[in-house]
Length: 133
Ligand code: HEC
Image (cartoon, rainbow, N blue to C red; front, side, top):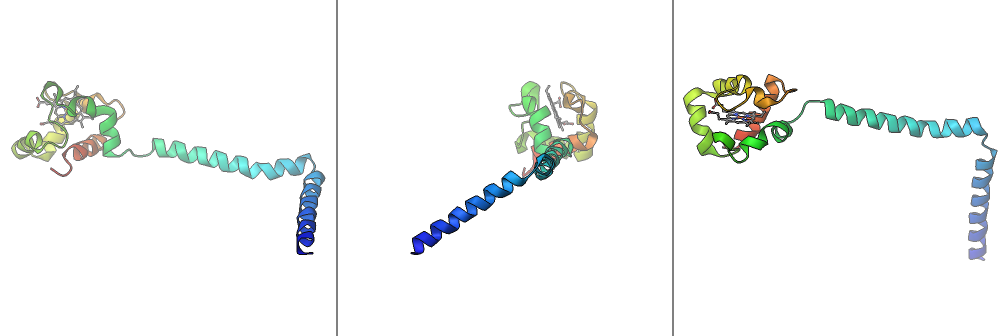
């Protein structure tokens, strides 16, 4: 008895769902799917904003500095190696080290050759390289 009642209930549910779907005309269907499209567009805009927004020091470093600073190409101070960075920071001070990265020094290209970096981006990348030393 209980099983029959359950089957009847499910059958009614399916019937009603089908009936609703069949009574929708084209405009109603468009209206129903529109919010889904809007959500997708909103998501895409968000993703673009995330890419265009401020980058972290690590992201800038990975994009523009790691090629030389990971292994010390041409004598570049190696990332997170205190022995490479500390003497520079002690001798020149942070601001001059930052300025030298902006203007270039010896084999270090101006702005690390990062075409779309701001002065603050360079600072973030330096902070990442000397973090924890
Ligand atoms: C083409 C290789 C190369 C790239 C790419 C590069 N550097 Fe350098 N960098 C060097 C070299 C070589 C030195 C050492 C220069 C010297 O003191 O003779 C250096 C030194 C530095 C110094 C120390 C400056 C000082 O006054 O002691 C900083 C800070 C620095 N780089 C930051 C960066 C940042 C930030 C990036 C990425 C945006 C970057 N570099 C990308 C090669 C590079």
